[in-house]
Amino acid sequence: MHFQYYKCLLLFYLGVNCSGVTELTAYSKIQYLTTPNYPHFYTSHLSCSWLIKSGSRSGKLYLDVRDSDIEYSVGCMKDYAELYLGTDRKADIFSRWCGGTRRKFYTYHASLFIHFHSDASLTGRGFQLSYYMGSPSAACREKTSLTAVRHEWQDFSSPFYPTVYEG
Image (cartoon, rainbow, N blue to C red; front, side, top):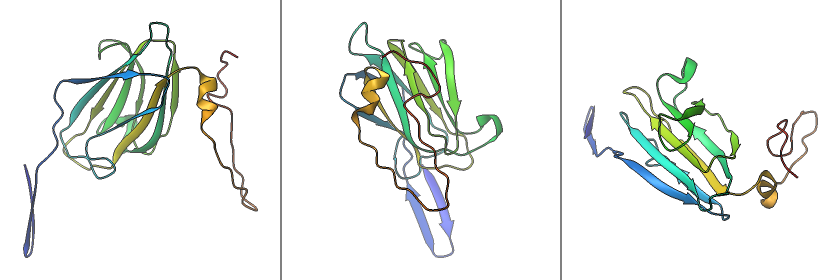
């Protein structure tokens, strides 16, 4: 429980706690995962874990961090999200991010473990990511609109550029 006092107002709210590991199964249809309370601010002292398993033994996993608003710190030492190639935090760490980082991941592993941590200080909205079982070319299923703005440089690339992928 958290209390905040203002001159004539007392705000009372219950924090969201994560316990254990939430297991999810990826299929060819896009699914979504968010931090607790997203798109509103997450609470302090969170330790959340998710295990995403492929719905097929040979299934490859695709993960897209669509929105990220995690307290930024050098080295992402305060609030952060971590991605592991395997079934728990003992597996090889693949990525750690914070701030407004948006990333896309494609792996030949059949399992991905995600851990989110928040400390006692600042909070943000957290993250929203999509995941599915498939290939990078399947990432092109969603239409993307581009708008040209005069006198402004913009970049776009194929999924996972410059990484080489099948196809």
